[in-house]
Length: 402
Image 1 (cartoon, rainbow, N blue to C red):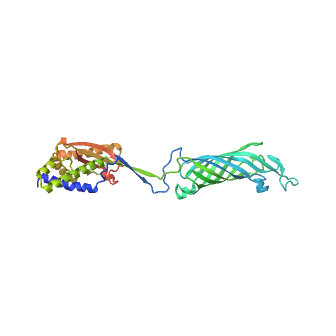
Image 2 (cartoon, rainbow, N blue to C red):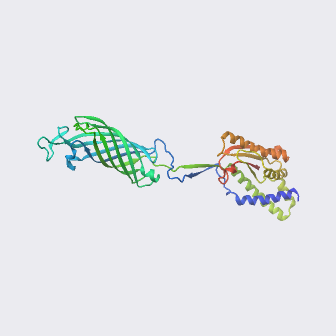
Image 3 (tube, rainbow, N blue to C red):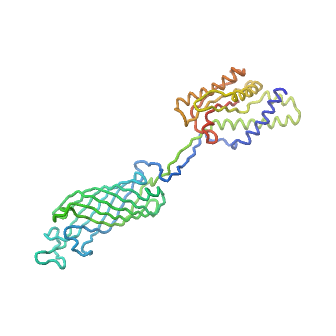
């Protein structure tokens, strides 16, 4: 069997084989990205500094625990509360806010401090009397918040209810004479109910501790307290929430597009050869083989960090060499070397891809006598997974002709 018949048979066999496994004819973009999300519920992508900011406003009631306030009925004791805050969530679990809380506090006084001049019913008594008191105040505090729902259950964008305990420090000031400014500690629970992606309803319950001197009447206690409950709204600015942790896999489709072009050419030549063989037209067969524009692409793969050819590789290249010698001498064959971008440095992959192309070139020229002018080499360095999401198939040298 002469080389023309062998060539025709190889083309007839190889073109359908490629056609069965190839992608659709449409050319892909040079690069395509695949996004793979982490399945771990606690892993998210950290946002930029200006993401996940919020503002809150609220109102409710508060009780000040001073020296004599327990003598009051609840209606005389409770006072309105106003809250305004701005804050940011740094992660689904951890956030901070700066809050203004204030309005006025009601209580009871024995020495007349902040007195309203009205006696508390049932008091006075001999040697002991109490009057209603009231004074304006505000409390500015910074709070560190922990979203316990996300800590326990992982981040869920559409969770309806979140509970966030917090601790804070700040300054409390009574601005009605006698004035006072004291350091204060606070702790509380923020209960958030999701209405829309941008809006929550909040129930904030907190307590604060301040010096016994704050209400202007020292009673020898270690400190006095403030209990506040408020209901309000929180508006969350964009970007809101977090994306799941993800990995972007980039595929280099340039070699695949080259192969597709070669496959289409093979299919056309295959059809012409089938017709010529069916007609017994040896002259036509001879013309097709001698003026063939492409040889079936050959792909040689390598081990990690290596550019050595195996005996199996050399056998494949030997068959390729015989076909190259019988094709149109004007056709130039390009040997392209690749490396796996996922292993090794950029410099190493650049060298490996070049050496792999050169190894195929040297074998074809020095071992099998292919004319050097019929071949050229190029190298692409490290590339992402080119075929079947398999990095081993990126450690390759591919030979195609035009």
